[in-house]
Image (cartoon, rainbow, N blue to C red):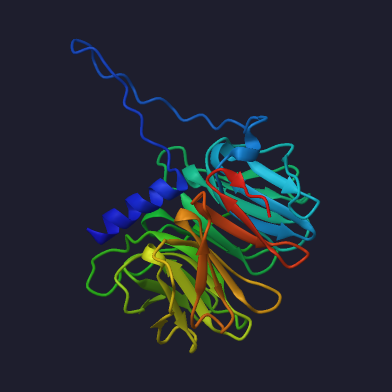
Length: 329
């Protein structure tokens, strides 16, 4: 039940596309299921108010992605945004990552994986699955060639050629289960190269050998984790439902709950240049830690905008994104 409820809540937050029902006359044979058409994102004057689900930096540029295949770019530290010139999909994009100022990837619904070589101006479709909408929620690249993408129902993909080809990784089932069917929400790595995935039922999946083998780590929490980050000193943080944040200081072997001041679900976390940590969540909540994630204080926006992503500006401020697009600093 937790898995179902968490998946539904996550689906609502990310704006997962509803499945359409085709009405048919009772005396007619069922119509064949329409074939999905991969259509490019449209340019719109309303793109700046589109729900944004992830954001990152590509050198000095801010790149943000969200609903309807919208990709927003800012070259003035978040003061203004414009739409990317060319995006080959109009489905929801859920995550974006760059390895340098030019090269990056984005993932989203219908298992879509996009790549850019010009800082997000134009994108090329590397992968999609038009037979089942198994969304990808997160991705991580350790270098321009090797990366991982994770998503619904334990979907994990790996590339070693810059995304030209992607192979599926078969994960082991969690202890006591017969199959791996957990939703994988956030993949990240620490400075030593260990890989982690924040997922459902208080679990974190870990690989200490560069993704060759994976094992489940119990945190002691029963809810879902939607976000994760490795701090500069090696500590790990995962955050999720009801404002829950857990911390590990030993590479994921053991976890302890961080003290937080709000119960709004955490959607993204970021360590800033001064080593403080910012976490954002639903209901307009921003959390801040100055003790390496051991505890967080917070504040809530008066508009209670659902915060979905955060990125640092060059000035060291936290640029926030929401279900209504980028927010004024």
